Length: 126
Image 1 (cartoon, rainbow, N blue to C red):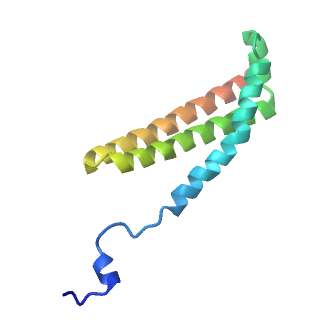
Image 2 (image 1 turned 180 degrees about the vertical axis):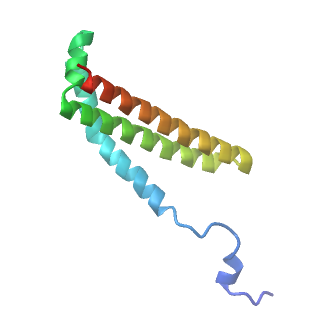
Image 3 (image 1 turned 120 degrees about the vertical axis):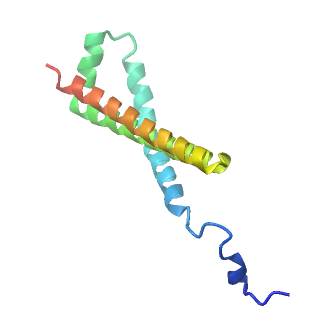
């Protein structure tokens, strides 16, 4: 017989944090990706058959560069959030989990940064 309350029995059994913020961030990035993916696919179809000069001229347009940067940032952020959930759910050794999370976060940040820098360099090239 235990004299502890249900709250007393539950304390120390797991995280008291809420996953609402992570869930909302993943859903918001997914909602942002829907129109961006549609724009990206439509744009690539319109650029089919274009040569390098035509493609770089298209990407040099300010609105295209902004949309392409937004697409890559949202894509890598959403992918990082999804991989984080998979790692947290299926990697059980804390050291391996921490290492994998660091690699995923740094990899996503570096990939997004390199894409945005590439778009900017193309957009400002003479």
